[in-house]
Amino acid sequence: MKHHRIVVGLSGGVDSAVTAHLLKKQGHEVVGIFMKNWEDDDDSEFCSSNIDFVDAAAVADVVGIEIEHVNFAADYKDRVFADFLREYQAGRTPNPDILCNAEIKFKSFLDHAMQVGAEKIATGHYARVRLNEATGLHELLKGLDNSKDQSYFLHRLNQAQLSKTLFPVGELLKTQVRQIAEEIGLPNAKKKDSTGICFIGERPFRDFLNRYISKEPGPIKDPTGRTIGKHVGLSFYTLGQRQGLGIGGIKEKGAQRGGGEHTPWFVARKDMAKNILWVVQGHEHPWLLSPQLDAADASWCSGMAPVAGRYAAKTRYRQADAACTLTSSQVDEFSLAFDAHQWAVTPGQSAVLYDGEVCLGGGVINTATTLA
Image 1 (cartoon, helix red, strand yellow):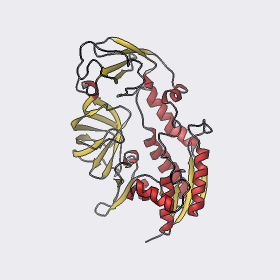
Image 2 (spheres, rainbow, N blue to C red):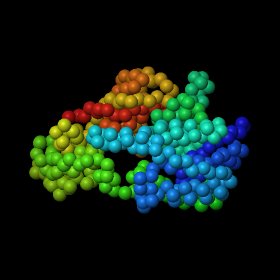
Image 3 (cartoon, rainbow, N blue to C red):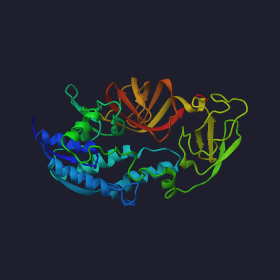
Image 4 (tube, rainbow, N blue to C red):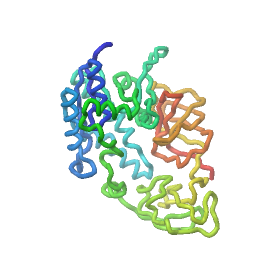
C-alpha cells in the first residue's frame, strides 16, 4: 500500500478523530487541521469552536499527530453565509451545510492542505469514494451505515475534489466508530454528535434569523382564503412546518380535503408578492404532495449530466430514496417525476440523484408541482 501525506479535518468530534487514527494506523503521514468557520458569536453557548478545538487538540495528542488551527471565517461569510441570507430573504429554505462542503471543506481547506504538502485530505463524513476502472471517474458512494450516510451533503463535489479525498469511516458503522474510539482511549469517544450548522447550533432558529433578516408580518390564510392568523415574516417559515404557527387552537367545522376537525396545520405555500402564508390541515393535503420538481444550479460528480431514465432521489436529508424518472437534464438544470408523491418539496433545498449506491449529484429545488 502506498503511503501518503494526508491532512485530516479534525472537528473535535469522534468521526474525524477515528479517521485520523485509522490513517495513522495504515502508515500514512497524518496532519490535523482544525477549521474555524464562524466568528460572530463564537464565545456563546450555542457555537463555541474554542471547546471543539480543545477536543481536537486532545485527539491529536492521543493519535500522535500535529494539529494546525486555520481560520476560514471570512471565506465562509462571503461564500456560504451570504448565500444563506439571500435565500431566506427570498423566501426559500437553503441548506448551508451543502454549500459549506463544496466551498469551504473541499475548496478552501483542500487548497490549504495542498499548500502544506498534502497529497490527500480526509474528513469524518459517512460516504465513500471509488475509482471506476472502466470510466476512469471517481464515484461518490453512500456510506455503509445507511442511518448515517452523508452523501446527500457531499453531492456537489467534483472529480478534482473526489480524487484527493478519503472518507475512512464511510466503510464503518457508527457503532464501530464509537467502539474504536473507546478502545484507543480517545477523550471524545462518547461526545454527542453535533447537530445543525455551527452558526446556529442549538439556539432557536427564529431568534438567530431575527438578527439578520427584516420582518414583515402578514396574514396566514387557509385554502378557502379565510385569514386565520398572522405570520411574523415569510422568511421565518418553511414548507411542511407544523410548529410555531400560532394557530394550533383553531378547529374547523367540516373537514377540509386531507384534514379533519382536530387535524394539525402545516405551511403549504408562501406568496412572496402578496406576503401571504398559506396553511392547510392534514399531513396528506394535496397542496403538500408533489409528483414532480424542477431543479437548477445543478452539479454532477462526473462533470456531465446523467442521461434521462430511471433513478432514485432524495429531496431532503434522512429521507428514504424515492424512485423517480429523470425526464430531462442539462449541465445546469433537470426535472424529476416521482413514482410516489413527495411530501413538502421545498424550494431552496437540494434534490440529489442516485443510481444504486452511487451519488450522481443534484441541484437546488426551484419549483415543485403539487396535486392542487
